[in-house]
Length: 173
Image 1 (tube, rainbow, N blue to C red):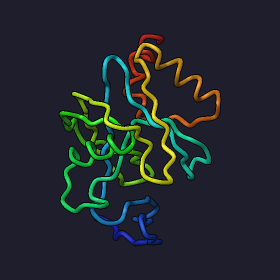
Image 2: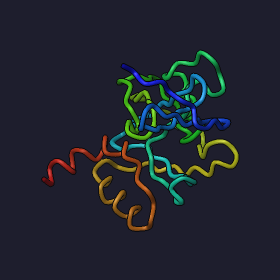
Image 3: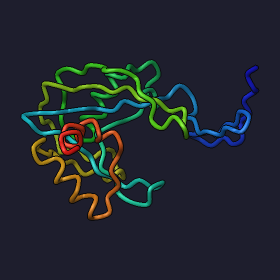
Image 4: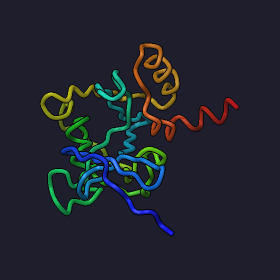
C-alpha cells in the first residue's frame, strides 16, 4: 500500500512534502536543472557564487534551470544559454549524458548532465545582474590543487565536481 503524499509547505519556488515518515523538498512546476561539463583545451570551466543555504561561496560546474523562463525548453538549449550567461563561453554542441538525482534523500530534484564542446569565448560571463558569478578556467592537471585551495579558504565544493576529480581521487586510493 502506498501512503498518501501530504504537502506541508509551499513557497514561490519550492514545496515540502511528507509521505509517511519521509519528508522531502521539491521544485514547484515543471522545472529541473541542467549541469554543464565544459572542457576546452585541457581546462574545465567552473563557477563560484554565494549560496545562501550554505552560508558561503560555492565552487560548482555551471548549471541552470530548465523551463524556469521559457516553457518547453530542452535541457540542451537551457544548458547552452546558461553556459554563456554564467561563463561567457558559447558551445557549438551540447550533448545530454543522462538524468541524475541531486540528493535523493533530501529532494526530488534531478538534473540533466550535459557535455558542452566546441567552445568559443563571447563575453565575460558572471551571470545575470546580482548573481555575482566568478568564472574559473582551471587546467585539469591542476584541478585537485585548485579545489583544495578553495576549500582551505572556506569555499564549499559542490559534489558534482567529483565528476572531474574522480581520476585523482581513485588513483590516490
